[in-house]
Length: 398
Image (cartoon, rainbow, N blue to C red; front, side, top):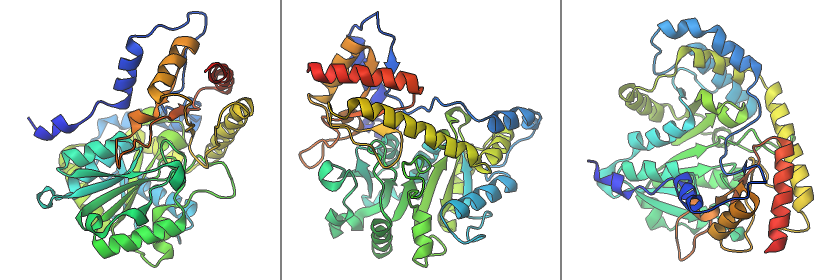
């Protein structure tokens, strides 16, 4: 057996199930789950209709690199969304479609980390646990960048020593952040790109929440956008990960892409060819339809804004809950220990939220997720409003 498997920690939702396993809950209140970031808005018809219309293509083996039309559509969308000059992204070599970014974020580390040199893989803390697992199974050591209120819930790259940067082979960043909703600004991305040039490491930017943001006139910047503005037209050492799960309410479609440095993606594509992760033809056609349409994405953002407004209006004077710049999570501090908060909330209000400490690790004598809760506003608006009233009553009672 691979000994690195012993280094993996239980997934957050395994911990949550164990926590709730010994608890009872009130039968007179329907259960409300706000723990999992699984979009519940309807999947747009343009996706479902395209998917069913191309079921006949299941008779063909798909290629690992995907159909040219899909890669061209993705490249066009990237250029439009991130203000990159048209045709600056070569769809032949700079795009790899993937079956959701979860598997791609994991697989990427396996293809780029050299385990023979005591490597570090840097990542935000709290974080999406795939980053940690990817690092460990690639033979690297995770190094955590604490994201706290003092750092505006962003990783402080300036606090990293040169000795750590020298050992760094890969850094995962997540902007907008999961679970914080914090957005890394262009200037911080510029400095990180310069640091990658100086110390020769790779930046993997998880941008899966980039299309859910509060201010319609100010979308979050992207890593490739900043690369191009700096004159790094080949996106050297930089890759981004995008998905239709959150943008288009299609988590079950398992469709996303990786884009950026052609040399890195050449090696990544080689790895995937052996890994056997080609996207099915009907999914590719449905993905083309999704990336070509923005109307449903604008409507999706409006639906989340309405939920945030309704929920925060109820909680405003009773709990220190801040509206995030992007994403669909609330990340409030808890008035008691976060695991106790989640357990008592389930027992008294039949609601499930995720303890923040389940998303983070002890680092630098602190656990930056401790005494926080991740609340995913993915349920229908009426259910989110009911949840807010229950949360208000619960917090007042503490």
